[in-house]
Image (cartoon, rainbow, N blue to C red; front, side):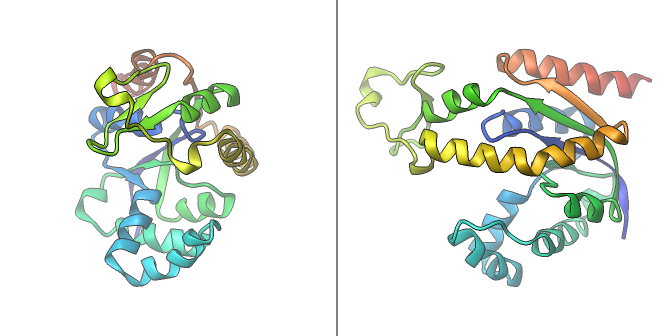
Length: 212
């Protein structure tokens, strides 16, 4: 089975992929697919794939490429995948990228580029209100006084953990970036600006293709 042309969006954790994927979907009409969300849902529902992935996730290990690709193949059977999808943070390895080519044509890869120090600042400054679930930031989105006293920081939002995640990301993504650059598909977007600036840059790229 092979579906229509798809788009890949990747970048380091905290680069804003979740925020920008909504914009890309609205412009292109391609449904957003996050393998992370799909894995968590599969585990929650207790599917065979979820059970296969759960032990790896609980032990902080990378879920094997085969399990990820099985998850993608299941997703591609949905009717809304016929015209292609927007893959958010997938593929993460070269074997995944090569396997994906058998399922869909990748028309472009949008890479959000943000320096490590800024990523660390973004993630370590996040705080969550356990009552409302609202996420704040000590610099960019301070909580109102009546809420600030009950905010908590996620255990994996420490600098040590974030830098480990970034190291893993760079190790995996460097060969992927080169892989797609050689094919003329990689589009690097400066993700260090505010949300509106980044959205404008992405919108310009997408609308240029639509209008051509």
